Length: 332
Image (cartoon, rainbow, N blue to C red):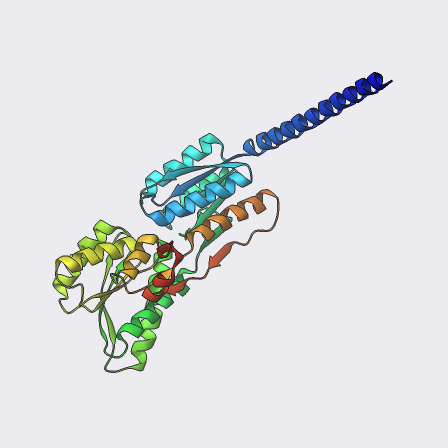
C-alpha cells in the first residue's frame, strides 16, 4: 500500500509539474504574442530640423521611447535646416506607408506643399517646437514651448541686466522658424515697455542678425556686430548653439567681460555655459516633455479621441544659482 501511495504521489507531482510547465509556456507565448502585436502596429516618420542640435536629439529619443511603448517604430531623419530636403523626407515617409508624420518645419511657410501632400494621402501631420504657419495644409496638433512667454522672460532678464543704465543690444535670430519669431516678439515687447517708462536708460536693439541657430554662424555674425558696434552691451541669442558661437567671438575680440549673453533653450551645453559664467541665463525648454506629449497626442488621434490643435509648455528662467543646484552638475 505504501509503494502504491508513493507511486500515486509521484504521478501527481509529475502531473502538477507538467501543468505548471504548460502554464509557464502559455504565459510566455502570450507575452510573445503581445510583443508581436505591439511591434506590428506601424511606423511614424519624424523629420527633425537638425540632429546636430542636442535639443532635437532629446525630442527624437523621447519620441522613439514613447512610440515603442505603444507598438510603433519611429523613423528619424534630419533635414539639416533644408526645407527641400524635408519635403523629400515627407515623400519618403509616404512611400513607406507611415501612420503619421511629425515635423520640425525648416521653413514655417515653405513646408506647406509637403504637408498638403500628406493630407491628400490621408496621413495625419503633427509638428513640434516649430509651428507650421501656412495655409496650404493641415496640422492636427502642434506641441511646443510657449516661445512667446519664453521671449518675454528673456526680455525681463535683459531689463534686469541693463534697466538702470541702458545699453546697446544685438539679437541673434533664426527668422525662418516661427518659434524664434515668437521669442524675439516676446523679447521686444518687454524691452519696448521698459523703454516707454524711461528717458535715460533705454535699451537699444542696434542689430538683428540671422545667426542660423548655429554655433559657426552665430560666431560669424557676432564678429561683424561687435566691429560695427564696439560699445555693445549685450546679446540675446535665440538658442544655445548660436549663443556659444557668439561667446567664442567675444572671447577672441577680448570683449567677453563687456558683452553679456542671454540665450534660450537650456540644453546641457547651455546650462554648462551658465554654470561657467559664459551665458548669463536661459529661458529653458523641456524637450523630453515636448517629445512625450507629441506621441501622446498621436495615440489619442489614432484612438479617435479629441486632440487639441496646440499644446504649449511654459518656460522658466535658469541662472547660475539654478545650475549650482542642478542634479546635472551634482551627480556625486
